[in-house]
Image 1 (cartoon, helix red, strand yellow):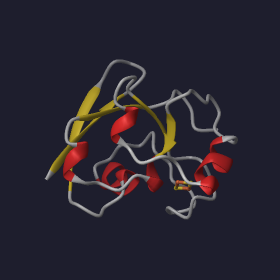
Image 2 (cartoon, rainbow, N blue to C red):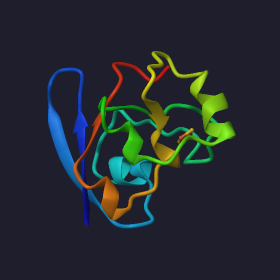
Image 3 (cartoon, protein in one colour):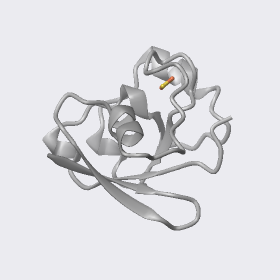
Image 4 (cartoon, protein in one colour):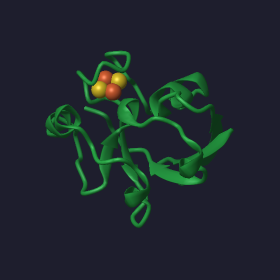
Length: 106
Ligand code: FES
């Protein structure tokens, strides 16, 4: 299992465990991380699964696809380390990844 740390704007930290192959969005929604709305169910078509990767950890993730980059234009508060959690697959190298949840998705 791989631990993913979700930091909310109010300072709350929730640590959830994911299996290889799951997406970060799937792990978040299955564990009640309600800030991840995921309206399109992971089709990379809504941008309501936005997360901000902790600075210094973004290099642990594969680069975003062209489609993900295009959809990131629609997030409410984009940052240089913004990602769509439905496009991030759990793998052991992500253990301990810190993701910040935006104050709003749209
Ligand atoms: Fe819709 Fe990620 S769940 S873009």
